[in-house]
Image (cartoon, rainbow, N blue to C red; front, side, top):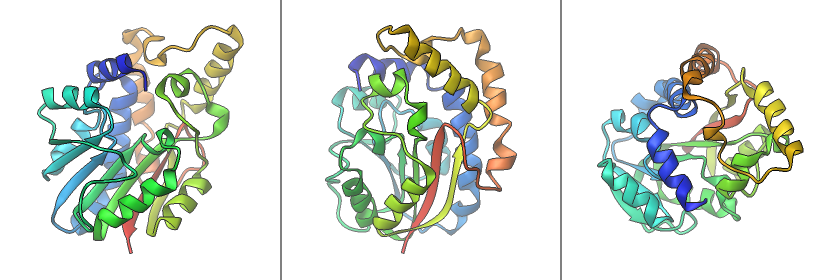
Length: 243
């Protein structure tokens, strides 16, 4: 990920429609499983500049924020976000069965050996512990944001399920999210590709005045996605347990 993108994400994480909408939908997806998770710590794997703060902090568990970027962890520290750990997700520096919850949102696409990261998640998760995996969906949606973020790939729902199961975890939910905006985003990215302009952050393309409208559209799917698995969207969400 480009260094200046960490600063941008830290600045917009609380107000940008994408991060607000993601928190709303993910919170609803996680809610049914929280009461059955064992006691223990939470690992935010690939925590970045505390972009998950408003989703995870309300869970009331001790948080360990692991990231490969010292710059991202410094920004995270400014928010008082958990205990920062500078490390690689394919070599987590904690003993087996250390965490009751592992959060890996928009992480695996950054890792060349994503199966190694899943193996580490499984190793460090307690029995009956919960993992939340979120990745960008469908290669056809590849765009500027993938390029500047250093992504290796996007995923189909079946690819994510197979990856998680091969890592020794039991999938309990697998769905896509950001359904209603997936079509417009696909059209916009195809148009941007035709311009041949250099890639830059898509977060800055739309005026902030549209944030409330886009958030409302994103959040409107919560009642659907929290109950049913949906086959198409801009992200794949997978909830799994340690067997």
